[in-house]
Image (cartoon, rainbow, N blue to C red; front, top):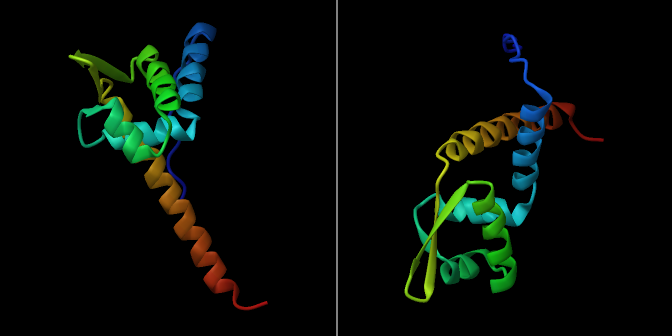
Length: 118
């Protein structure tokens, strides 16, 4: 059953450019991995390096990009830097995208199972 179409919100070219930039920030798997790691709460750069398997330089570079996009915020405590998600809409966005992908994959699996053997 197809979902009902909503009237699209007309946006200026500047607004569309900002939206495209936000999606470009989210188009990098390491940034998504970092955000996913931060879903449980604040973590230090060292902890993020450990859980993501990235290098310190790579993780720091991606965190800087996320901070510049206002998706995460940082605080310094002594020599350590801690990051947390600062834009709560990222939780809803990830839930929406993940739910959509799960639904598509389930439909594909169902079609494959119905198709029988070659």
